[in-house]
Length: 386
Image (tube, rainbow, N blue to C red; front, side, top):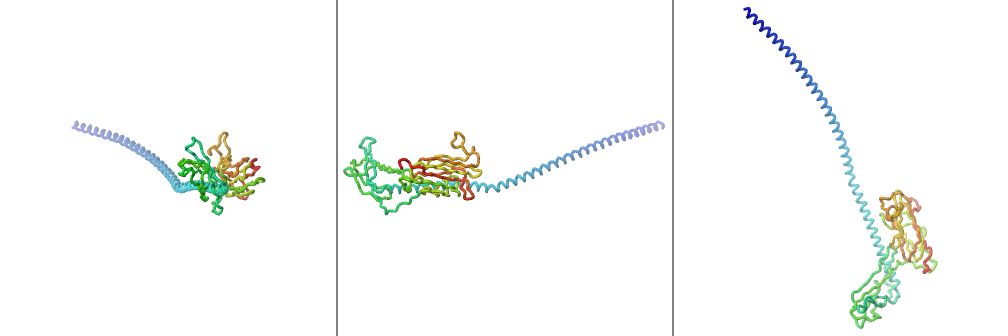
């Protein structure tokens, strides 16, 4: 019994020690688990806080980018809305330039046609009463280069026939040329009749003064001299011609054209035409030609003094580079200034003098004051005309 009790006591003691060991182990495990749980919770809390901060920052960036995209979209919408007007304005300006160029071309063509009509009328008037016209006849039977000169009579024009109108605009064209490949067959070297100038009655049949072989090739070369447009007859002595005109109205629409100085101050002899801006020399002599061109503020002026379609002097309010005749517009400043010229020119009767604006804009005064002017005066006639 005693041993049994001792054994039981030992078992109880071992169990109590086991329980104490278990309790201590549980306390340690519990403490470690709580500490680990606390650390995990603290780590989760810190990561959650960091993630929330990042999400807030990303939200702010997205909002700012959305606002920027909205502003850019509004700008693009405005650009697209204004694009039609810009394209339309550019098209209208291009069409205006084209129309201005066509208008200038049509006007030049009309001036040429009118001047040709005037030259024909002058030829008809100057050839009234003449006995004949020289005609060059080439004979193949003669050595090469030999020609015969025959005279074909011309009937005076009938004064009762209507004459084409004479217009003092435009430049004259070159004289015409009439040729014929073969001589019509005749008898005894006679030639068929040759008609006179256009518009005149047909001439009667005539015979040449030189005998020509039948079937000989004939080349008719009627040299029609270039004559100036009909002007007022110049006096033998005491001829006066002077004018001075200013610009108070826009002379034309477009960028290029003859400057029409509309305000005429002096026009002795009536040789300046304010509708065309052209001064026509009434007689051969020495003329003093002056001009002053004032540019619009912020613009430049480029012009050319033209005498019968020949450029005499170039004007440019911005000046020229040394050794360069016509500098490009990109190298010039847009300084507002004026340019002028003063020349003594030898002009022939019928020469047409004018100023042609090639670029820029002329200044126009709001009052009656003149800013740009054009003048010419006959100093003295040529010695052969005195």
